[in-house]
Length: 170
Picture 1: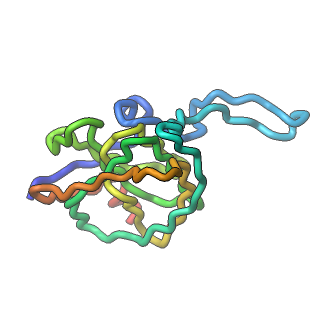
Picture 2 (picture 1 turned 45 degrees about the horizontal axis):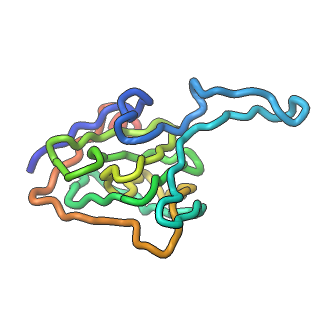
């Protein structure tokens, strides 16, 4: 089994796959007479293809235990998909570029508290990988009549190796 080493989730490292949704470094300004701070335009949502529309959902992820096996990936060819953890959940992200799936181009990230992600249209990703406890995620993605999820089973499973930071918190 091949190993996939995790790295910290940063805007620069994740840019080929979509957006990191976080307040750190985000454009912000006061609104509502100065009683609220608006962190503005945190992700590029792309859900209108083929008559799609944005939908908001909550996904409740069951906690995973180490070691984690990566045996399948999925993508949403008609729209982006954003995940924002509710309650500071620790989670991992496994992605590969859009287009023909290439396991050699997979990357794995660990999300720090307060970080969400927005997968760009067509980016391959593993379903939610939450740790520690049952974790809720606010999800913004595409609704519509056409199916918008392709899944593949990998020829060989990969073992997700936790980042030292994740192990220190375990």
